Every structure is written in C-alpha cells, then in structure tokens.
Amino acid sequence: MKAVRLHKFHSTPVIDEVPEPTITGPLDVIVKIGGAGVCRTDLHIIEGQWDAAMGTPLPYILGHENAGWVHAAGPAVTNVAVGDTVILHPTPTCGLCRACRAGDDMHCVASTFPGLSTDGGMAEYLLTSARACVKLDPATRPQDVAALADAGITAYHAVRKAVPLLYPGTTAVVIGAGGLGHIGIQCLAALTATTIVVVDRNPAALKLAEQLGADHAIVADGGHVAAVRELTGGRGADVVLDFVAEQGAEADGWQMTGRAGSYFVIGYGGTVHIPTLDIISTERNIIGNIVGTYNDLAELMSLAQAGKVTLHTCTYPLAAAADALADLDAGRVRGRAILIP
Image (cartoon, rainbow, N blue to C red; front, side, top):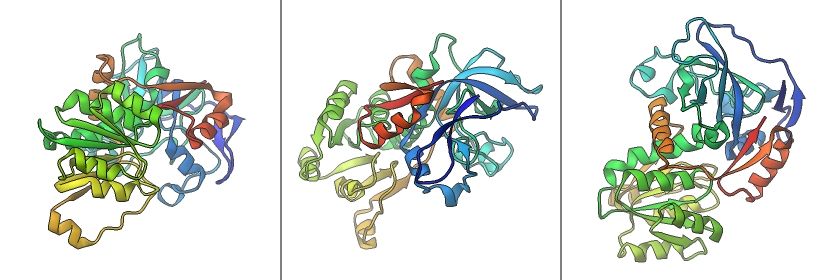
C-alpha cells in the first residue's frame, strides 16, 4: 500500500510503498482509510518536538485523525463489522487501567497513538483496535469527519470542561479561528448561552467565525486585548480558549482572562510566563487540555450528524501530502486539510 512516511526530522515526508497491516490480536481492527486529517501537530512531529515524549520510531507513517471503513477485524470484535463506516479515537486503549475505567481514555497507561508513537493513517489502511472505533451512519463520508477524530474532540473536550463556567451572561473568548478554533466556536454555540468573542489575525477566519456563531470578531492587530476588555466592561472574559498558545497569544490570553476566570490552553508551542502573585491575587486558573475521551468523540459525532458542528475542509490526494503540509505551514488552509487515499 502507499503511505506518507517521515524518514528523518526536519525533512519532507515521502510517499512509500509498504506492506499492508495484518490482524495479530483478537481485538485488532484494520480500517480502509477514507480521510486522514493534516494537523499542525504533524508539523511539530516533523520538527522533532514529539520525539522525546513518544520515541518516534523513524521511518513511520504520519496521520492521527482518521476515518474510513472496517476492512478486517479480529475474532473477538463485536462492536463493528467489515464494511461499517467508522471514525477512530486517536488513542487505542487497554480498557483495564484506572484511567480507562474512569473514562479518562487519553490518560490510559498502555495506550498507543497512531501517527505519533506507531504507524498512522496517512495510508491506504490503518491498524487500530475495537475500542477506538465509533460506528457512524453509513451515509457519512469519512473525508467529511476525519479531522473530528483529533482536532474535533480536542476542541470539544476543552469546551465540555468549560460548560459549567459559561452560564448566560458570561463571556468566552476564542483565540484562533483555524482548524481547531472553528470547531470550538460551534461547540460553544451548541452547548452554552455564553457571549462568544473570537480573536484572529486573519479577516477571512473572522468572517467564518461569525457565520459559525461568534457574537463578536476582533482582529488581532495589537489592540485586541484592550478590545476584549472594553467588550466586557473592563472585567475580562470568564473563559479564554486559546487554540494558538504561541507567538505571544499565550500572554494575550492570560491578559484577557478576568478575575476568577479560566484560561484554557489548547494550542501549544509557546511558553507561559506569569508571576505567581498574579495567579493567587486574581484567582485565575490555567487549565491544560489534550485530546478528548471516547465519549467526547461519540458526543461530538452526535452533534455533527445533527448538523450542529461541521468541518470546513480542503481535500488533497494522498500523493499531494507534501503540498498539504506546506499549505498548512504557510497558513493557506482555512479549516482542515484532509488527505484522501
């Protein structure tokens, strides 16, 4: 099969011919990929930023946002069958550790992460597990939902945690209306009655944000922190969801967060420098977020299939993976880039 493989860090992935995966365990599932998301994390992987955490086994296949059709299944698989349309939770998990039993799948002590720690889905086929498969309506096109498998549940997971803080009369700021942010805006609109303020450098992204439910759109031109303060009567936001968290956005996000408010860090790449006195004297919270749970993905797919969350995508053939990565890096992708084998 053809696959997008990274051979060394700081180099462009290439299309290789590799063997198809095979069933070796009773709960193994092989999925024929119908859509694989191209994520900014893939750019960080290429730069070697995940190597220390994951021990990335070069060369290997990229791709951690995957959807498609069940191609083969192990003898103990009962939740899906060959031919079913599925979206895949990005981390196959054991189901037995305390984290799994508590529903915190993403903290499973024995999980793998296809596309980061093992071969991923930028290929014709992917080996995963029954526990990772969420069965979809057969009419669903995998290319339309693939990026919900990571970008979607990462955004949904953060919003879901913020929901108790966002009662009517509150304000939530979304920093970045790109691949994750445009999903986060829709989740906020679907799950809360908060006032949604979106901050982005790109006027086109802000226009999309308004179409998706933003009440206010602010251009990040240097005066955006003051603009948020003015919108909130000088108080600052009750919740800030930072989908950028680099190149100064992390400092802006903290300054936009009002007293007793919560700053949710979803993007990454920057560094937060905050005097501890500023934290305790204002009782502001800093909340980290990683990929969501299996239940988060199932709930998000319910919203998606009800038409309340939609992905804005740009599709590329698998052979054009390098072009997709270059376009993402240059900021030419609105929404999410999707590879279609």
